Image (tube, rainbow, N blue to C red; front, side):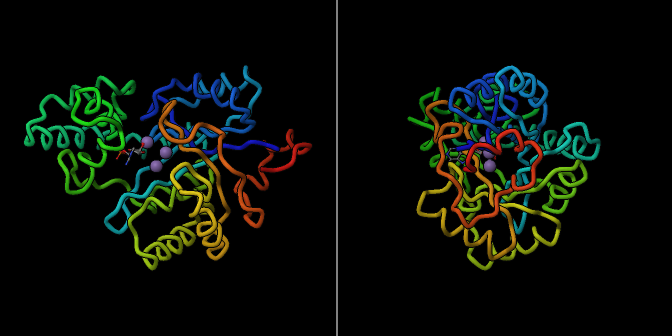
Length: 287
Ligand code: AMP
Ligand code: MN
Ligand code: MN
Ligand code: MN
């Protein structure tokens, strides 16, 4: 079976492994086709591509763009993007600048609850100083003993209603889909099961996304409970979206490992359906 994983993170965003080590881990785990999809940055793709050549796996250039839609954060994965495309690069740069200011507000909010030094603390966990996010804060909070693990760090802090959470306006759905498509890529809604939308709002999101030229939705992801796979496979079909599969790997021991996911349900139309990158693997059965 061909093992395709189209969502993972390196230390260019909030993963802990370098792009080279992410690719090496994917190879060890038997992945044939891997997309590196760091949050709001493409700086890891060049090194990942070199490592993929050495490891004999196929790298798909990707990104995961932070979007605000209907008052909530939604993540849009771009696959087969051109990381050098000026409109995409400029758009991502703008999001990263917003992250630095947001991190300062998050730190100030934690300080109001008696937790000081969080900005510097989180930054020490961010290999890429432009891409500081909640995961870096969470790692620092755990290391400082404010939470026993990442899960509790996000339950006690950094989430709506808790210390360290600040509202933030990311880019628009329109922009994210436009930048991805302008660079030659395909836009995919990441982990739809993670959003707190009511059914009709989720349907409205899928409609809007489709109208803007979005093409895919994650069905099999580390963020979905196996009991949710069928629901999102059905939604993909109902809204004319192709299905994607990706672990959303961030760190060894945190969540599902790269490539360690079940296959897409047989009735899904995979996002990789017509990709020329898949041709070398046609002798393997699809997964
Ligand atoms: P940010 O883009 O800075 O808001 O950070 C979002 C990231 O935080 C996600 O991509 C996940 O990696 C991580 N995250 C969000 N919620 C949780 C959670 N409940 N447990 C662990 N990680 C989480
Ligand atoms: Mn993340
Ligand atoms: Mn995400
Ligand atoms: Mn992700």
